[in-house]
Length: 189
Image 1 (cartoon, rainbow, N blue to C red):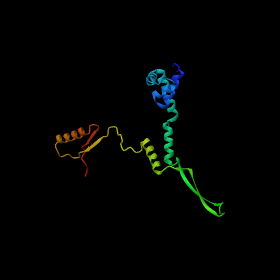
Image 2: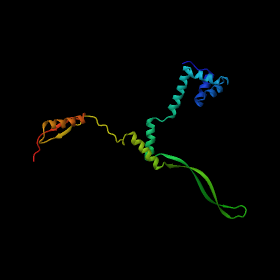
Image 3: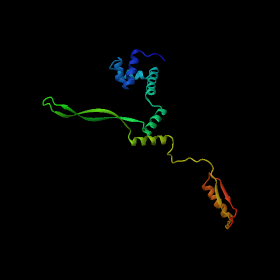
């Protein structure tokens, strides 16, 4: 890869930050009259494209959670180990002496404190639900592959053999993926 000039490097760094071609070209030192055209031309150069992609990948690698990290965060939320910071206005009373008359008075002071509170139960349930879906615990659809045999017990058939053959053939045609087993042994009383 050929090296970027100082102007090109300024343009690329500004473009990655703002994603505005014209402003990036102007801030890099290119003419304001032709900044848009110059910026577009620069973005088409292969070595600049490659540099931009490398910088974006570096940013994404540093800032995006991996699947393992996300599962860890969800697990912590599901069991209640995650907390969130809330601002709470605290009102405290103090007894202070009034300098004008010398009497002791109750004076209230308000200030904001940051406290850590557990996440809401609804958020914990949502995290559990997401973990369950990830581990496929709640799927109602079951994939059953294979040949499941069908047993037909006719016992003592009093009808015509052709009717029996037709009935067995109808069942076989209705269930083409199943093996049909016909039991014609008479039932004992």
